Length: 458
Image (cartoon, rainbow, N blue to C red; front, side, top):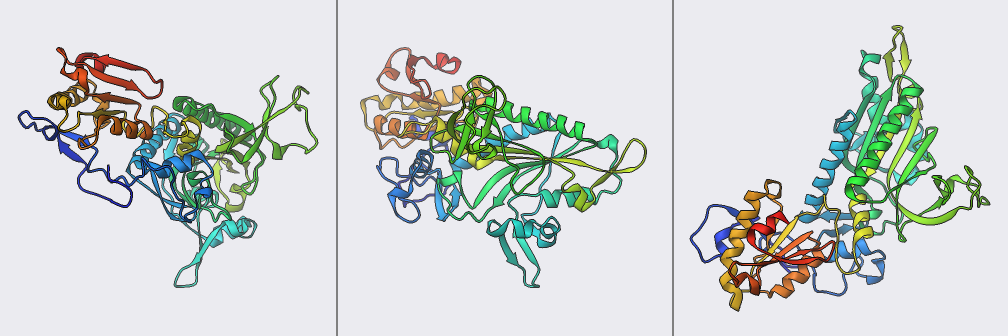
């Protein structure tokens, strides 16, 4: 992998025969050398955009910069580099699965949102400086959408023939969002440009809307369970989005900016901004409240008819009369979930991923060129083919670290920093009969020596 400041962008695949002395094979292996991956893997400090080490105030920001997952473009904006894009695409697939399992339909709305939509709800003024505003050449005003309640409600309102038989309608997207943060910090945890999943639901009654609300909250719980993240659903303020009920999904962590009140006796939990400042006891069971910090990774709102009444988003009810749709909106911070997961799961000097999101599942390390073990290089290529053929779900998930000018030890340190869940090394015991490969599980620290067949059963 190239060092910082030395960028490459050739094709990402090389033939397996490049690391073996045997006859050429047609199968291609994902290899490390060609990857576009600027990084400082063996540097102790990484500078922020402003060049001050002290600005790197959280672990995820420092690690993501150090290993080349992100690169600063401007304050609050980052280039997402290939490893991060792979992880994010995996996360979006999991989000799609959970949203579509409850009936969600995916759409894609423009980032440019006309000012008149926002003026209709008074949010053009109430959102203040958070909105990134611009004018086109004709003087027409727009904002870069931080959220899309206005746009989606206007879209649904334009469908004049919507029937109660079609409800609930659950529409969602995963797109870039924009917010003019006064003080962007913590890397992807608080930026000016970010990816978000936002879902908007339309129901025929308040009771049906609350059932949909619970359904989406359960899907969020399922999502975080699949990612192995211990997320709390807490009572929250409706803020500028509005509505009558709201919950945040919080990952407890010291670097979190939200203060959470939790009750050890019952299931009550809340953002402290929803409680009386003098309140020290649980409002549900009167037990003492404890406090922790958290990173908000999701937010849900029951909106009622706040937006549907403004844009006249109606449906024909069972009696053949027009009724206003009951709405909810539901956000997930996609890039924030990535960074928060790294913040929660990683050690100080190496990244650890949720298993479903690791950019690559396996890293193969062949012997150093010119070493005593070089004769085992061909076996590494065979092992690559064997794993990808025997375990179809690992096709495209195994990376061959072909930087054979480096020692195994140096490449192992890099693999540890990048957080591949499994690392397989062709070391001294690869010369045994039968050959044994060193298999490391990065998340548990387990190290075992296995034959080729045993390795893919591991």
